[in-house]
Image (cartoon, rainbow, N blue to C red):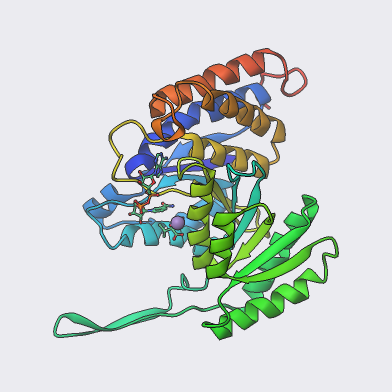
Length: 355
Ligand code: NAD
Ligand code: IPM
Ligand code: MN
């Protein structure tokens, strides 16, 4: 299994290299057979060569890789984020990674919520355009496009995952009072798909009042299914309820091919880039989502245990209340991981060797 690593811009390029040693250690101890190569896609290359997602990248990834681990994209020198759309949305749409799973655990309840965001269509469809008059934008159009096929396969996969995990409640967020066409499509398909999962009780909420209720009291929510933009916004609210954007991870999956793009929810954070204080926790949790997806639950659990220990130490970054740095936090995670693995909660029978 080969992983393409794209550190990207800003704090993405700071956090990704610090989590790779944890992947390497787990790979070694559990004999996962994972290798990774790093790709320099991002702002520097865009500015120097005008290349975002290089030609042939999608074919290369499909043929030779099983997953992408991405840090973040975004650079103040590219204010319209053209390179980010080219790379990030290029990967999500180009590889049909239509399910974006963004779990978060509100501090107030300590119980996790599974947010599933449709990841390829809606207001991110790329359909639209601009009419310019006298060098000013006169007309601007970004169409919200949804096909029944995508809504169906997205909801079916999300509901099946929730049901398999023993969840009992799922909430569709929509805005069908103001945006009736795609809203109606989502409601129709949601009701039809729910009928296949008798263990799941569905509810439908307008996204505005949903946000109000979620912030006031997240306890009623277990699973959330959302169109693309609503899911994007709610994932940052989820991060805030959990304690910050330094904590939340995301997995973008194509269930048919199994290909996955794994990235933290946060961006390149130019306000703290270069300070060495970016929290690598989100990217480390992203690794656990990747390990789970690739069928390595023991390795994933070991990393989760070590992260939980390290968060309690003073090596934690300032956003988690510590006095540490990106490097000191991951050094503490590695120390915990070594200790955990030495305690013999191991590993493959006969462990340690590569398959
Ligand atoms: P952001 O997520 O980068 O940062 C929002 C706030 O959260 C900032 O105050 C930042 O310091 C803080 N934060 C984020 N990650 C953190 C971490 N790991 N540790 C500690 N604090 C953290 O959002 P933004 O500032 O709106 O966007 C910056 C750039 O990133 C923009 O160019 C945007 O388009 C891009 N972006 C990219 C992605 C992605 O690549 N997946 C996601 C979101 C935003
Ligand atoms: C995210 C980001 C991206 C999105 C941007 C950078 C295109 O905000 O992954 O949450 O809107 O999906
Ligand atoms: Mn976002």
